[in-house]
Amino acid sequence: MDLYINTNWTGCYDNVYIALAIAWSENGNPATISTTGSTAQEADAKLLGALGELNLLSNTNIKGAR
Image (cartoon, rainbow, N blue to C red; front, side, top):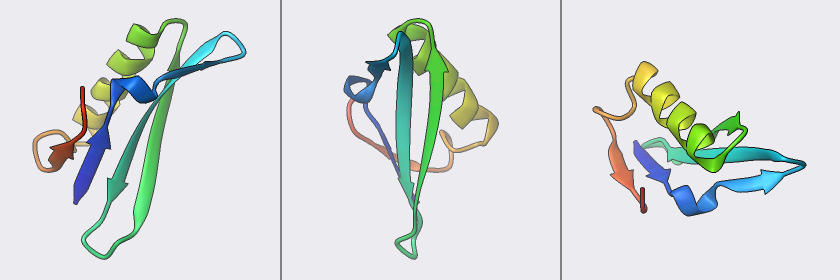
């Protein structure tokens, strides 16, 4: 699985920041994971926390800027 994380993707929509990660399985199936926060830093921190809880950070090839 490849996991793409880029804090430059975090955007503000209606006063809510959304952080996004995209994962591709070995079979080519995509999945997205998103989190929200009142600041970009909060959304990014929640995203990294969620990915850690799912054990995606240690078992996955991470690509993109963080």
